[in-house]
Length: 424
Image (cartoon, rainbow, N blue to C red; front, side):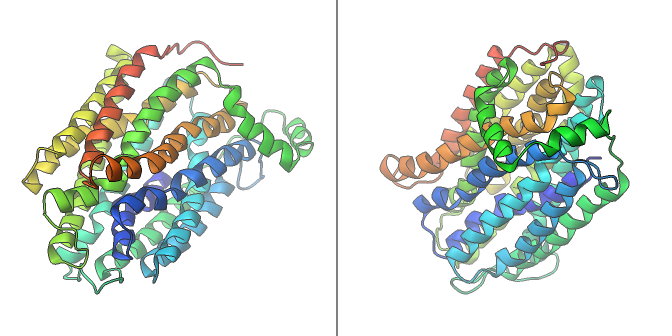
């Protein structure tokens, strides 16, 4: 059921670890990076609630409810993964990122609802933890690929100005194959449950027009149940911190620890490859911690588990500022990995246990507004802060991200996690 997430995470991990590197190689400046990354949250804002809404209202006798979306998204994302590292200009890479992120969202969003559909309430915390495990494994391998191709297979990790290195290009090719293969494995090896009253289901949804779907999807933010409102504040600051990390870790590490901003230099590309290893480590930690979180949640509650995990992530991001030895970054990644495992599972476990099954995809899509809205805010704010307050010293983005994680952890106190109350 969750194996397809391994493939999806190949796409996300390659994007998170390498897109800033690609943009800088193609001529982007430090303060331009957040705006160029705007593709990811904007496509999520547009795509996720719509896909969630329509996947609730889809049923095919062979492919089921969610799996048609898995297939379409996987095919488009795989094509983009082959195109991205061959971008010859910055505008081509930016457009490819827009299309690729939209495609990833098409296949990813229904996966969240898929677990809610298929599992009873008492198994959902473990179900989302299993998703976190496969996300972690996929990200470990994908994030490590440029380093592996350079150090194990002897590929070049540098190229002339404006050209993407061979190690990065082949990483994206492997990622494309892995993405499509893993998603199709889930599609071909799972069977979804049909609606209880199939004829009624079809009749009701035949009366829903495209405009109705769009209107209801975006109106959902004003109809959120109390638990979703509470979790939305936690999600906002969690994902603001993550976006700061994804955009600026490569620039921060290469300038602050390796001492260079020259994208054609050996030192810069060694640092960028090491960032990939760091991302692999935090995702590997997340994969291991994913199975410990349900155990801890039973002892101290899901919201307190999430709070502790977010604090670990905050301190992990803070510590990067004080590091001069690249190897010490691996310790920072442990805290970030703990936070990442919890972000991928605990909010969804708390929310899905309160949602009716026939609106699972819809509410999950609306909930994901609070993944994409903080990223849009970050894209508009981080570049301004670094340019006007921090003199374009990108390591300060790690401090901002750490503060955001700590705020998210404190906001867990406002969450009322009552597993027995189902929202109508």
